[in-house]
Length: 189
Image (cartoon, rainbow, N blue to C red; front, side, top):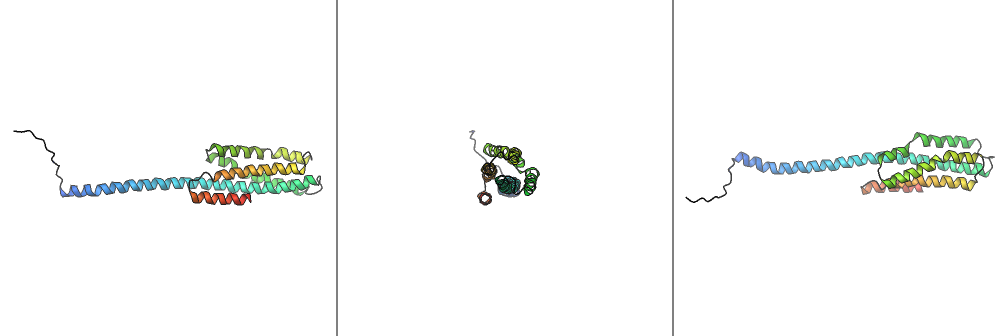
């Protein structure tokens, strides 16, 4: 008796063969569905983050607007040695302070992004905004000229705009990046 071993395929009944034939495409479909779900989940998470960032940009935009208005009022006030806008300047400062304290836009942006460049831009902008009270004291004492006052406000506004520029770099979606960049360019204008 010779001992030859030969491969003998196992025999399945017709139901087993049909189940096996259906299982392979079904497993492929489940795998593709899982992949699609993970991609959509990542997109949803990124859009939620960008929504929070957009709210932050809107808050910074309002703060920039009030800084621009205060810059003009301070220039007139200092240039006239207090003869003009004596009454209007405190009201404008109050509006600026409301945007500075109320929005919390910069602090919220810090929580949402881990990029070192973005954090550096936030730190620089926060330091410039924090110097506002000291600059106001100098303006009230007329110890700064109108051009020096303008320079402070212009520099602070530029630093706030740098924060918004960094937001456009966060998204990996081209359409979202373009929309944010367009808004930032509009703010720069």
